[in-house]
Length: 208
Image (cartoon, rainbow, N blue to C red; front, side):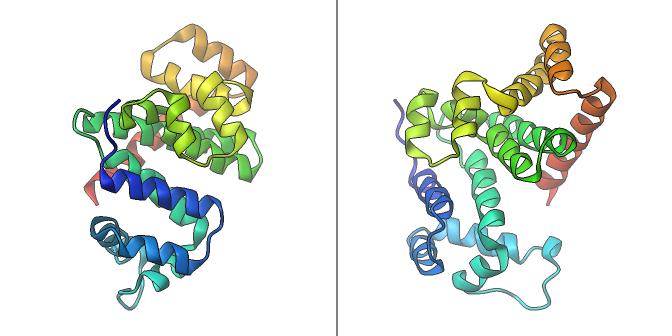
């Protein structure tokens, strides 16, 4: 088993704090211990995409502006880019495409809360590769909702079907594509359009 780099460890701790709805103070305390993570957060929140009129320099302010839901998404995205020695950047990119694709499709066929979970499922679907350990061990490090864990380990439930569909889009597995699309009541046009949107979204993320 390969060692998790300090930044990865801190991101995992941050994800767990956010999932536990920890206080701003606890989150701020963790950010202070990891300069790289702190720098990335402040750079992210001060980017032009947020359109803030003043620069945010304190972690407390950054956490309050982002809110827990966005902070969780940001940390999950960051985990895909903080690669351990042998993990190629393409792995993280694939995970982000999956997350965005699954989120877009979930918005068409699931309640809003599950669309959020779909994003997380896709983002974490290559966690075993990113952390260099089996998926069940990786999931012991992270606090994720039960439906997400079930989808990641067993491809069960609607989220599991969505993940199988996302994988079928990558591998051109027509049989799995047709089966999961039918189960989720999604047309191939819907899926292909969402896939193009997800790829464009990730391109934009990389360029910014």
